[in-house]
Image (cartoon, rainbow over all chains, first blue to last red; front, side, top):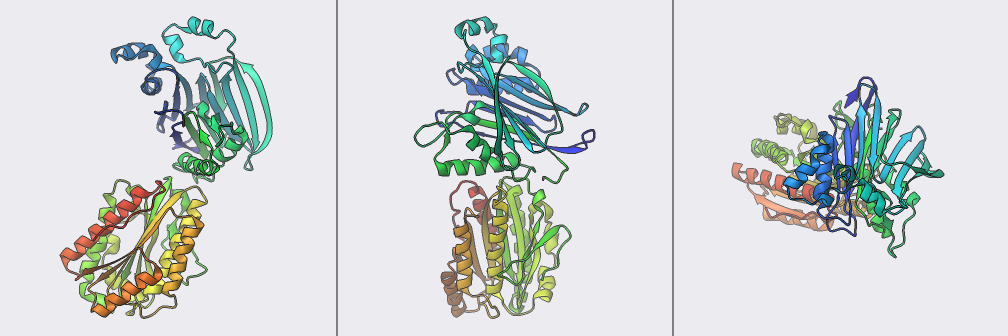
Length: 262
Length: 251
């Protein structure tokens, strides 16, 4: 879709793949190209019915009805924990030519600006991410009491584009949820669930994130189903190497181009 | 060389005189594509059933439109007589109208001449598929292919040989650009048993997937052929991305 204020075309595409340790994919991606919106919800692995809950949270986010979720879940006979899911939201604001980013829980945000790919990994030290549901069900206090030493961190990975060679790395503690605006001066911009850094090799050893990023972000083009194309190729390569994502993997990306897909 | 329509790009093939044309890659928005080539004999002997042949071609395209994933199909139609002539290069079904094939025999016969360059045309089709697949695969597209050749006679004017076709098919497999490639030779209105045997031998020597003698070129038979082409294509489209080879169907 062409945005006059930006004088560029935006393409939106996504991809999801179930993790090797899950029976069902507990991630859910919702994209709306007309609304220029991408939402990823990642259900809590230890909770029940989160595959349903992740879908409900994504649709409620799109329709601004998140506050109604406890009632909706109750009417469906779902326990509170079904809604225990992270929420990553990326939305383009056409009138202001900027992207709004919202991350509640863990996951990834990334953008390519000129020749630098910046990847932010948001995580929690006790692997206990905060969920929007804790607010909805007034369980924030209980969550904080259960994980008193839990804190949110951000790992920054920087890669030279297009070689995807490592430029640098950083780390810091941050507050969660995160809300910020990002310039539209990006070649592409996206979010991903924490499954992006859940790969192990044949022996079960973690695969270094740099090796995963080198394939995941190796885009050849940016038109149409560009994310599906790249992820199909990346996972074919991972399969050859015997690498598998233990956790569900979901990624949604906007590309910003002149309309030629390049 | 074929006339290049404005919207298609010309590609030269080192091993074939003719090359091929294709839609610009920027217009290919899907993650997976099936390349479909239909080769149509327009030599002198086909004139007797040219109307049925044209109808068959149009019905084949219409049938492909009804497949579950019509947007994942790129179709190329090539006519052959003494030489080959590309009616159109690889392009999405959405860019094709059945009326593009109006007066197909008359138009193409004028370009191609009266003889039968079956092997040259077949070789070009396979080489074009391999080249197109390689170009798409390097940009992360998943690709498979199916190739139909409709003929009423044997080759009598080519420089390519069945062995060259076989090697070109093997090259496609070796390069791993294509998930699978099916090649189906279709004999229609064959004049005698000797002709059928020659085409069967061609099928063996070139290692084609299937040879089907459909008999006469009646309305009913050609309609059945159109259905066979569209169902075989649908089967191949459904196999794209699965990593599994597509299967031949029974006529």
